[in-house]
Image (cartoon, rainbow, N blue to C red):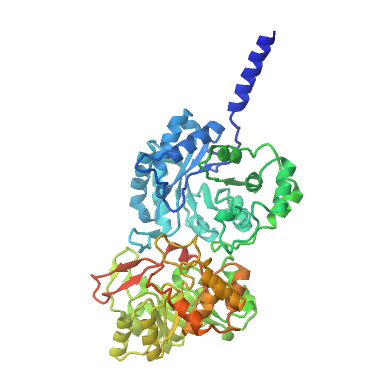
Length: 603
């Protein structure tokens, strides 16, 4: 009898320890079902740990462990470089392919309609699969390997996605990092509705408007970075609370006998979001799944809701609110550009602030596909329509070279573009005109040809890139300089691996900041001001916007400025390219990064 009891207990123990969690599913509008949580497989910065030459299979093991624990949804992407290991992990788990929901994504350099199917076939080859359950456009903007922008309309990319679905290579198709307006544009053009949208979602970034819109359209939402800034070692210096040690969160976790990360994941699930936690640790993978045996109280959800403090730049008012806050804080200069896609929100923010239009200095820019002389005025009129304004205070040529929508280069001489700018000024559409990302030789060529002198030049300027020769030249010519990316590589989470110091935690910078009772970013902005530069800091955080303008009540000592000067290494935050085959440009300059299209510069 005792032997039989022990045998029974042993069997029950084995069953309990190996029983997989049953994950609920959500219905996609096209009839397929999608599991309510997924294992994310992005490693961060597209890197894998060093193994001394041995094969590293960390993602393969994580996928295997996840499937053994009960996950049935794995999220990857071509750019993650983990598709191969995802496929290996699935096969190693023994779980049949048809029971697993696999998502992957189209990268930015394959946005041409006829590139979509080949790109998906490449991903399927990596995965060693015949189809994926969900294929997403990773970002709304295309970008080639040389960092230049692919101006393919994402409607064409979406048509390629529809073709991939029709071929049976993807059961469902969707979007990633798109906003409401971009999704609506797909629907307004009579194209197939996206089945899903993937965006960042966590306690600090809850995106209620976007979630409500997707719910109204029957679009399922998956959320990456579900833990946000919970973990102190991963949180940016300016990241808002909470952290994992927050007493309020710990109290909720104790109440349900769960961990704080489990509470954060459960909250997203109750918002209707499919969270995508990532981990390479077996017990954490299992913990992240153990969130379907309880429900949060209304009171607890209200507290968790209160942590939503970040306005995303992809939100319908993600730029409007920062502009309003900036003007209320005392800013009177707003910098935008047609390519940022934010002109409409800038105009809305200016009007919402109550500050009279004539007191606000507005800058926008001509993009690369409108360099023909007779295209300049129509392009500016289009920007003014977006802004709902009669004029801008400053209109800049964004880059010295033009580029058409088909990716070929426009060899229009920028002198002709400049003549179009002069005509825009003569018509009263711009009070002043200037340049962006031009160098000294290009500016001098305009002057040598007897054309109107640019009023301003906008270039990258920060501690690592102080450009003293260019500043001296502009000063000698009476050209005002505005500087974008003023913080350069100060923040570790934004700094490239090869970026020189300093970082915001540098003891020397901290000492200067303490001396003036300011923050390190404020010291950097003040230094640029004292160089004669108008800095253009960008932020969507109200407190940071207010801090950035609080730099006019002190002056740096000569000794402090010498130290700050020593950080100039001629290092550009934004990658450089050479256009040696362009007849009017034989110099180095830079191209925009994707995230800068989604943000606004404020000063």
